[in-house]
Image (cartoon, rainbow, N blue to C red; front, top):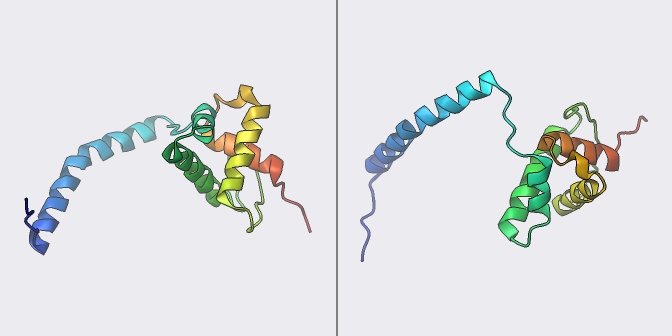
Length: 129
């Protein structure tokens, strides 16, 4: 079966229609975010991903940790300041967070960014020069 290739105009119309369908969802999420703090990941969710045998679940957890590490480069994350050396790989950051959660299972119910911040601050404290 051959698929018909869309022209540039048809592609733009299809993309515009998809955006219009997503607009109410985005508006609702935006309003919910303004009304209450949303937590997209918890320590438990990260731990499940970091201990999963499924590569995509591990990848999602590591991606979240990498994003928090990038955001926290020089800025406190939930009050935790960390200084991750440039040579540290994403896999290592995942191992650090997983090991920290192994040692602190009581912290698994906290927001993911706070868990990541605490784990990275513990492993990579900033030192004054």
